[in-house]
Length: 143
Image 1 (cartoon, one colour):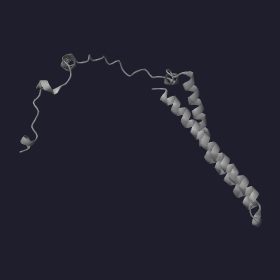
Image 2 (image 1 turned 30 degrees about the horizontal axis):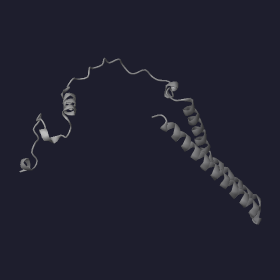
Image 3 (image 1 turned 90 degrees about the vertical axis):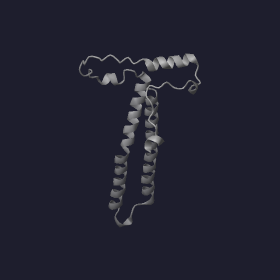
Image 4 (image 1 turned 180 degrees about the vertical axis):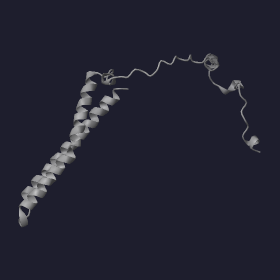
């Protein structure tokens, strides 16, 4: 039957004496901790906690943490400006192509635009790397 396979443990049964390798002092401390059934005292309901302000967000931050946060956020904003700048570069490519007519875009202009996109990509990579580094360092210093 199921009861034979899975016996129900007996409650409040002391463990066998040989089950622990801890010394008598450790066993006495553990028993005292388990036997302490005192309930925590209920606190009076004082209502909702007071609302904190923006200054409370950084009350434990050091000046270095604030500096790293500001630099990291500025780098993150610079990274976010990458897509609109790429759109403006592509707009210039399209406008030049239509203004030159059937002659097409000269290779020097194509290389110029390609290098602008390459420089932008390198700058965006650096900005994203700095944002991640700055915000990562300041968040690891918080706890």
